[in-house]
Image 1 (tube, rainbow, N blue to C red):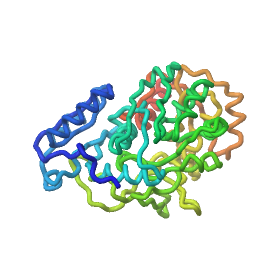
Image 2: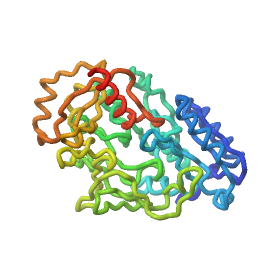
Image 3: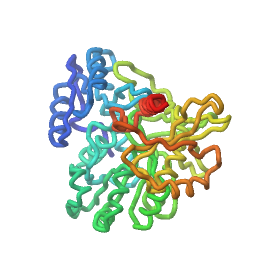
Image 4: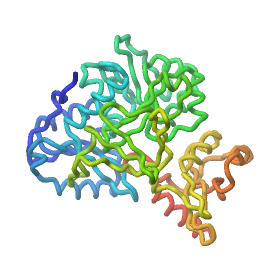
Length: 405
């Protein structure tokens, strides 16, 4: 049985260390050194711009030793993107990480997995992929995504525990284009898919290739996944986010908001602290009769148009399934008549075939169909986590429409 991860216990200290290494091996070395030094450890990205760095500097200056940090709690600060582009850091420690690692392995009935890593280690998905393997005596194999995408697919060494890999949907979609990459993916024991909603056509293609996918749900605040679909369930036709891991409990309130509680919950956003009450995520979902979670989208992204509720994630999944957009976001533009107008925004460099797009969208209720498709002029706005910044995108679209009038 796992206990607190050896080598991941920071001593109380006034020191604050910021780690912003993109190279996985240098990141691992830096985290080990920072943990040995003690104090607060803040994970960051080398690719952050001036906006994120100003927020980081302000938070770093507010670090302090409290009774909680003196007890070794909440010293590991992992970045998470908030609403409106606000950068936050969820506080974790050896106890929250250990709970997530134990719950993960019990859910998949394994003492350990070797992991191939293509996600950045400052992000909770990449970090936990590494910790789940190394803290159970298994191997972590950092890989270069650009090389993988280019077809440089290293053979998986034979290991009794097998290998796992974590991908986001766009990475899986690109690998499915290559028969060689599909064969390589078939060699994994589990392929974890997260970070963004996966569209039905992508999941159908993965199932047709007999890929051992595990869909799940988790947050930086929960030390990654708290529910997970087992690969055998996926291959039998399930397309939800699975049941709760042993260390966590998941509930959906009357308002449809998902709440989570359990031993892997964060200690608060640095420099603040929170008690161990359930955490309301802001995501919408439902639990089916089998206790499996179905994630419907963000509560704060819901569009109200003509009195009808539209969940952007549903529409975005259909649009991605057309294969016409390299990326697409559904927004609600302010409108005097409808309250909000449903529009689909896509990178200006794309050249979609709108005949096929409109044909597919006709299957949806009329109020869910975008009233306008807007090619974005300029860069695609993203937050510190690399995900689309919806607030910035909305402001950019509004500004672009005004300039064209």
